[in-house]
Amino acid sequence: MNAFKQLMLSAALLGASFGVVADVVVVAHPSVKDSSISKEDAAKVFLGKSNKLPSGTAVVPIDQEEDSTVRVAFHEKVTDKNASQLTAYWSRLVFTGKGQPPKTVMDDEEVKDLVANNPNIVGYMDKASVDSTVKVLYTAK
Image (cartoon, rainbow, N blue to C red; front, side, top):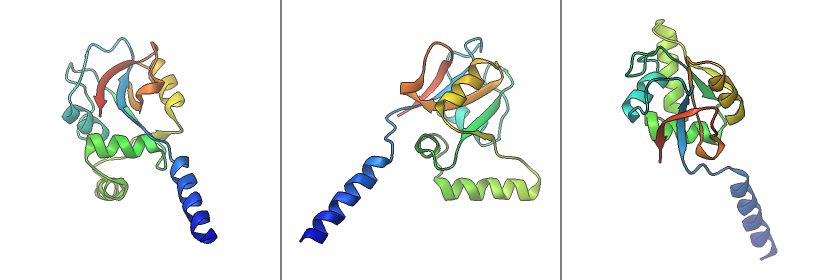
């Protein structure tokens, strides 16, 4: 029975080590004309199908690290792709010369810093990390 309790405790601690992301938001520089975008618009930008927001503003998306809980939540909620589907998607595009995946950054703070200092970068982050230096364009729940 002690081994069972130890296994359950280990499983609980492992589960607690993975961050829980309530809401993921797509953010842009505060000067961007768009006040909001749709899920479809966000998916097109982050899947390389469009490089413009609905207002016509040219944008460059940035992704977060592959093991990021925010990235997993974002892609499952917005692009409807899990990690392996996303890898396969970009592998096909790269192989055929039709696209390159977005550059990756470490975390919400790096996304916020890049977006706040460049009106053409869009990114995503945990809603809890948002402040006045970025503008929320879409909230994925």
